[in-house]
Length: 171
Image (cartoon, rainbow, N blue to C red; front, side, top):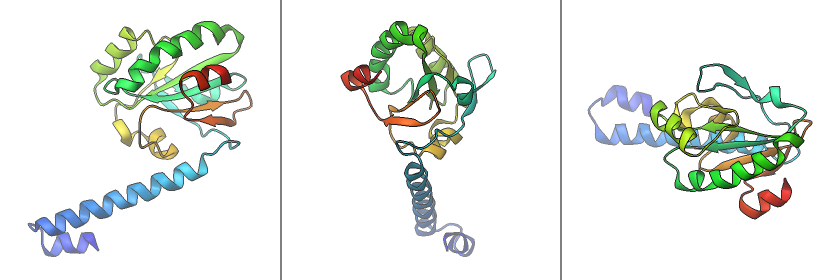
């Protein structure tokens, strides 16, 4: 195994590379298994993360609303570009029961908070500042950004990775 190789050859670059490869394969397999669990029609898993004020926000608190679960990051140009559409959807449909639950995969609090402000992301936003190692990202098999899940008022996923005009018409 990679651990026994590392113990036997602690300075070996080959043992180090093998250990990293084994770790990456295990993470990839875990993400694949997570993404297979999260399908259209399945219940959205619980997410509980801190907002910019440190208050824990739960996805389940939004049950009864149509929710766009939006995984994004300040360093992701497509995520930032999508902010304009999300603002439009939020403004037009929030009073009719539509909500957005943002999960930032940032590592920098400063960059995250600056992006929230500059992109006018006024809906509930959360981040553990753990990047892709955020528990919610690992549980949902997030490997790329932006990624989103549209959740109906009963808490079931009704669309995955829906963007642009397709998202607009679905809402």
